[in-house]
Image (cartoon, rainbow, N blue to C red; front, side):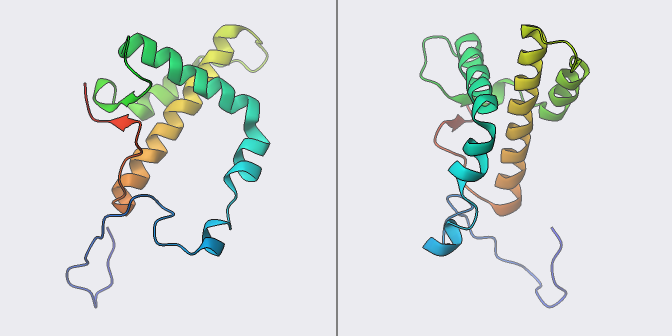
Length: 129
């Protein structure tokens, strides 16, 4: 972490999430529904399916959750899934590869943000194996 030369030991305060401590107006600056769901509704349906299928595979019989300890190689998986994509191939295989790539990219970003901003993992993200 880069620090100012005037701050010898920066204090890292744990936050619940990136919206924690923001005003109502600040929280509304980047609309989740209009700016994400409104753009990528169908793509997010497919990413949600990847979550569900992965949970059935890795956590059978358990409620939907991200068991983080079971696979931590996000960037390797992003590149592997990217190598499976041929945008001219409209098969289910390529659709799943793209959805899995998106899921792994979101996972990598979530982990990065948690580390950078010292934020608490979301409720459905667990460290169990």
